[in-house]
Length: 467
Image (cartoon, rainbow, N blue to C red; front, side, top):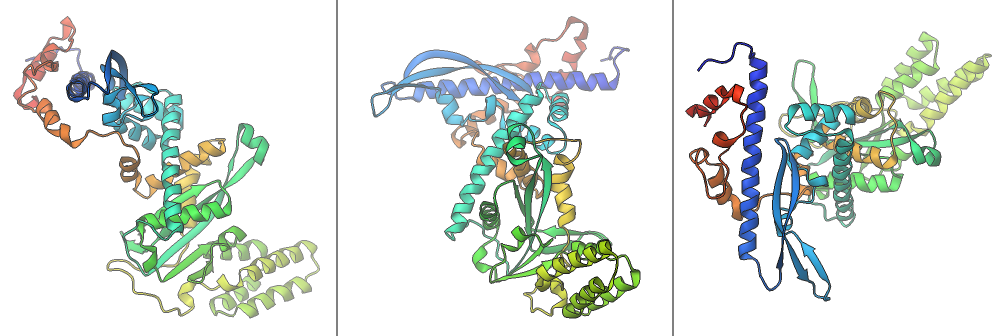
């Protein structure tokens, strides 16, 4: 077989890909049709009256799959008449706009990296399906709402000490911070130009992955615009979905000193002021290098009272009004966080031993997480958000960053092929059966439309290694 001279490898790749997508669409259509016919034969005819077939379209990564499925009329217990598609009910087709789970997941993952418009374009180029930016937005909102419902349910269970987490740890690290995002539309009028999105992460320790590189272990995260109390309940629910909170003996909370962060301190929590914010405050408010050295000396010597005394003396001794204000602001900030000025590792606390392969490091990864989870996608490019739209995307971002999106997606989206159809599907997709005509199935390799000028493509798919 000799390919046309004008055909380059990239064009060949595209043509083969489109052809394979066409065959895949016909295979999927055959499977859905056979399942629908089986449901028709096995239904209770007295309960479900056949009312003919209706066409629909399922958007997949291979393109749009058009097929017919039977509509049935039934009467409920109250005597009310209703209509149902048994195929939709059986397979759990409740995704937005009849988009397959695989395509919806691909759209959601891409939307975590790019704007909805660019995500739609990328998905359209990489799949056999054309997606609009509105379609990408709809999928994200649908999935975000499902995640929200799952998180709220987890929060209720955690509140009743019925969390489903199985992992047992004695020590859990928590870090919390916020990031202000621009609002749009009605939310802008109601809440102002911007609002703070709260973010919390929890993890068990760190594992060395390079010479000077460490990754957090067992990280979970949640983010939301909501109020403090509701956010803490959501955070506890997310933690309880992974960890057995009854086994946690100690928590170390790292924060920037915001009042809402410290409200989560409980009897088993050791609070420390984030070292980055603590040191940054000294550099921002103290101009004299020698004074800074004295302050850091007292700080690292755990002499917090002397540190506060030095700041107060400097504030009273200076004649510069601006300099005095800086010292007083620093003094107030450190006084409000006096119990957290010394990092937990310098307090001599008896900590439970870390797990094998893990180690306890100084907290301070929140700034990086705020950017990587929320800031990179939602803060840049002059983007504006509604409260609901921002929350929905943030929920997906937290799951993607913690490598939990695929697991949660498969759990909260119910579209699936029931086990009882596994044998039928395997038969339809068997490599030895593909070239043959199976019942009312479709032999895509022999019958797919191929332009007369490109009959050489049929030779490609006739090769045994590809079939």
